[in-house]
Image 1: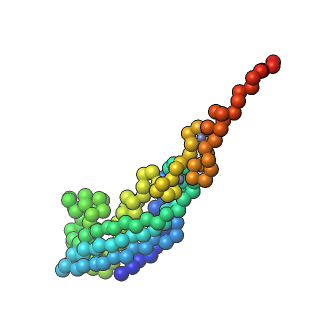
Image 2 (image 1 turned 180 degrees about the vertical axis):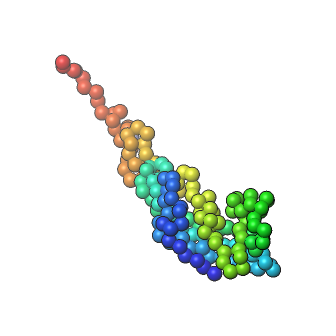
Image 3 (image 1 turned 135 degrees about the horizontal axis):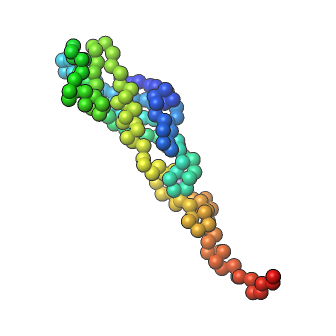
Length: 154
Ligand SMILES: [Zn+2]
Ligand SMILES: [Zn+2]
């Protein structure tokens, strides 16, 4: 089973990284009486600024998730169930529909790197001259070599 939703409709914003295009959740649902065990993989595309060189980057994100869904109890959701629900370990279905949006969103947000890089071996910016070391050479050494004026007039 595969579901697709546009990232802009999933409230994935916030932070330096944003989602772009569709989010796809492929899942396998195992049913045990009224309980469902849902294992899936959510994929999406994130864009943002590289933590090291500040260049814009785009990369795909792939997150596995596991969610248990129980049939909504007649008396409402209480106690431990309520806590599990807010932690996104457990959700409820009414036998007809199941909203997985929160769980998929949560797993994707967890997958965003704290320090996203445009590529794993990004060389970053030189602290001295500010050159983007991925694409241009550092000019710090050259500057140090250039001779200082021998005489200064004022
Ligand atoms: Zn970079
Ligand atoms: Zn430099």
